[in-house]
Length: 450
Ligand code: GCU
Image (cartoon, rainbow, N blue to C red; front, top):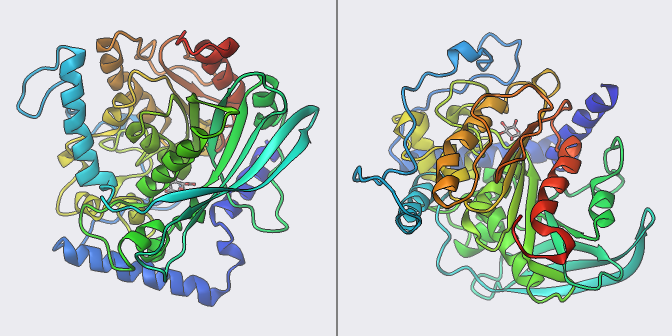
């Protein structure tokens, strides 16, 4: 328990990405720019006021709801297997068309569209060394993806990526790609109980990669005029359906896969995406939009990730649309915190899980006693349940049950897996279960699914 609390503390520091180390002046300046851009986006959408979100502090008078009996304020969820015109989706072929409708809704209303003129990325292997990760001989490559900025030289963008593969794999290996934190100099990784996941991965003869999202798109509204979004917009504000930070981070994952396709150590058909919290959101968005991702390990992604947004439990759309988080989304998404409501969304999180079908996806969450209720474990479970009919239509198996299980029940029989571990805001306790799940699809160098 003490270690978990320590981890949470460490994690909090890391999510700030050095924010805590910044001068008060620098912090004020970021907040001011966030507010200015947020206000400008509200003006663009003709919105004068937004509903405030509930508090993440369970003790606050306006604390987010954590009472299951008050959570289902919606009467129904939009059915992924019904077209907008009311026709039912009855075949895998029809699903491809319906999927297109869903992706269009996500792009326009929620995550934003990728611009058509994103410049090219050229990968450079900055350094390469033979190393030992515990007892595992490995090869580590540090890479930089240089983005062509000739269209707007004032902004420079480079994607930071590290790839670690077993020293003599014999054949191209699966790679677990983690959206990772940029540890400020002098700050070490948080202590981990048990075998670090990187060693668990190498023990299977697989590789891993750490992609640093904030190296190419900052995690705040102030940064939207910089990074890859700012470069493409030449430092100008976004349009209503322009990409948000989550799609920008997902774009970076796609560029990393472009590199993997050129690296003979990597099997680009066995790429896993993994992330926690805001990076869990980024991971499922990446998987939804990038067909080359074979599998997802989605950690405590919550609202804006795998949690049903219509549920009145934990974090709400009103929180996501406020000035601290709106940058993750297209400006259009702000509308759903006033004048519209989450019930007006044409899609919800079960659609996001559904568009990953037929690929295996593992949804991970921590214990409410340690992680809290902000993330909404049941909201993510329900998204998995309601995405399952799509997997079944495609001849796969969805989540194995629609009854919310006790903590530490491993639901990995289907192609959608769910596990609530006993720890906090972390994926660490679920790594062994995820790897066992992944093994079913990836083992023995075989590309065969199951
Ligand atoms: C906040 C935010 C969440 C997010 C989390 C994180 O709690 O409200 O949506 O997932 O930060 O990334 O740590």
